[in-house]
Length: 127
Image 1 (cartoon, rainbow, N blue to C red):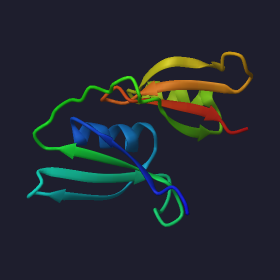
Image 2 (cartoon, rainbow, N blue to C red; image 1 turned 180 degrees about the horizontal axis):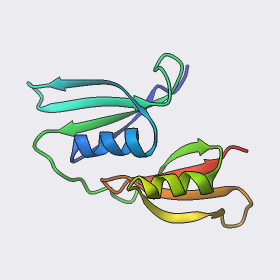
Image 3 (cartoon, one colour; image 1 turned 180 degrees about the vertical axis):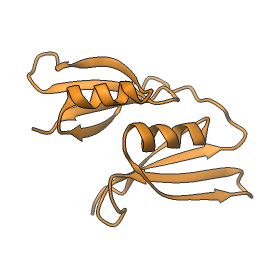
Image 4 (cartoon, helix red, strand yellow; image 1 turned 60 degrees about the vertical axis):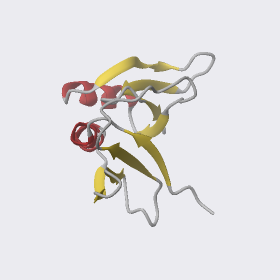
């Protein structure tokens, strides 16, 4: 068994694809419209789905926003350098909502960025 993907619902698919592709550096792997169901699925990731866990963006055509609720936590992405990643993200229009630094009660360097729908993405130093 292996984890295949994580799905989140997004209000503006083009804006969300641009964020994950252009700001976080993911590749758009595939995208398909389902006209009868009035939704589109887009899959993005850092490598082929056969070997990597990916992110599924679901866009319901008649919904422009969602209540994230209080059960959602975050998506975590490993990076070589959290500080440099935040600088690049900020310079490409991304929103850094927790500046890089050690996690509370620990030494792992983390930061948080936010996607266009308000989902939090944690950046973790892999070193």
